[in-house]
Amino acid sequence: MNRDSAVLHRRCNPVTVSLVLAALACLGSCAPRRAGTVTVTDFQPAGETERFTNITIEFSQPMVEADSVNVLFDTAPVEFTPAINGRYKWIDTYTLRFLLTEPLKPSTDYTARIQPQITGDTGLSLRGTRGFGFHTPYLKVAHVSHMIERSAPDPSRAHFLFTLEFNEPVDPEAFTRHLEIRLSTPAGARDVAFTVATAAPAPLMEVQSEQVVVGEEDGAIRLSLRQGLDAVEGSVPLQESYVREFSFKAQEDLKIGSVRPEQQGSVYSIVIRFSS
Image (cartoon, rainbow, N blue to C red):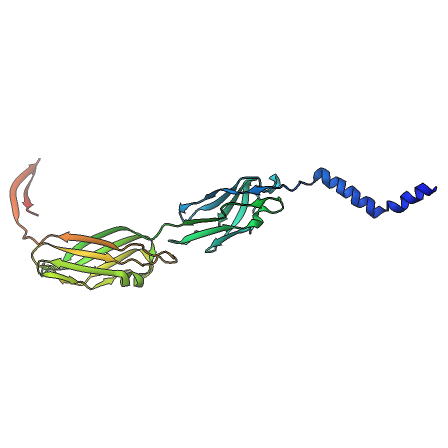
């Protein structure tokens, strides 16, 4: 071995050669880090959304390699308040989707905060809007039906029966605290006691008033549900008081309007028509 060869041998030891070869290989195959910024171009849902939904976040630049698309994973740098259970996957290199494993809470405001770590090792910097909001349908009265049940011995006395239908279940005890019933007749107006027949949380509340004197003239019964009633598991209560008034007619005597014979083939009958 001559002097030049010996110097070359000392300078190019195996470890140095391995590092150089690895660096050269990486230059040919490792994805370069990209300088620049990325923004969220779309976030869904926005505003009101149903309880059974998915959450989709779209970015302005590719965020992952193609081999990461459609791969499920449990966590991501996205913070939901209140917390939501689910899993994530990139549905393409630009778009992240959060797949819920249980429905959202009823009548609830949600916020989502996207953390800077979402960019991973892309070298990009997250800019622009990072916080987004949406909510499930707020509690509301969807429908009310009523009927008057007059006493057979004394038609001037009656019970009022109501069915209130909500878009989400409510607690009967809380519902009772928020409900008022008021009767108005020519004799005056007064509050009416009532009982709630529904025993467990449900979207339908059945209500029966105490027996009241309705008299022999027209009148009205008013149902008032004060704001502040919560849906079961909800955080946003009834936003406005719900008031509904029903009028009722005075009890009328049953009168015979007409009587006439009728024949259908060989069958004879008498038809009686009443006034009401």
